[in-house]
Image (cartoon, rainbow, N blue to C red; front, side):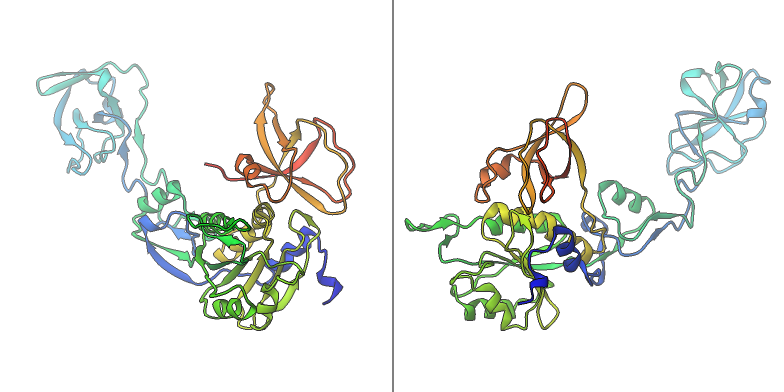
Length: 404
């Protein structure tokens, strides 16, 4: 195996994984199912919003030229939402109007109801010398032909509302990447099972499936008939997916069977190991049929850290979204020792001090097998390879973790 594929930097490894990772096909989905999906085409308005001059308040629509000249106005009718007054307002007339209703032709002033007094079929006003118009102009929110949303944005509830306001019942979105998850190891027992004394409950596939769903993919769990090269290869061969993510079997021991199994499917290895802690055995390649394979370590913390660093941007690229990770910065709350030869991503908790500064505290025990530590973390802190000791108050690079 080429040494050029070993001990790659995190940035280099991520670049190799993203190389050629383009968005998948386009499909139309109904508006209620579009949340979380990536828009495949620009969204352009087909009409003004609002499509007419609309009242911003409950009140009376009149001609401004008459205000301050006439003492009382003759009530001509009413304009309500969905029921516009059908005629033009004439000199000396007032139309009762409600919020959101179309302003009648000829009117250019809405006097709010709190500054009006009705007496029979007339109304008088006490709005001062220069009352506010209280009219929302046609196209005040957006106009026909405006680009409302750009391709590549992820639809959230607010963007969904904008699409609905534009009258769209369906949206063109990128197809969700289909991701197969394969957890290997005879020592693993599904939750709810009865483990032997030398077995543990399998946990990695559950967290990865949840992350894949949150990052816009569709997770499919594979279940090989046995923990063997032949069974693993057979399980993956029949998986109609865009990406295979394996957990465990990623090192060089006698029971690390995943890479030999993938070799039977024409594995073209692009990343063999990464100079990262935790997660050095993480690997990546392409199968002969074009499917991508990301091999994550078996230790849960290693797998989850590397999922954040590599799987998350890969799914974004396949979904047509920006693969850039949302790195930030925070100040250390306590000192850290010098770092070793591998880039270290430490599980940490964030807080805001009395001065409003964002602080971050790496947990003291960073063992890659500790799931409990990850459950309390809301960020990862990056320590560069060979970094000198850091002091409390020093700025460090962080990667926030989405916690609900």
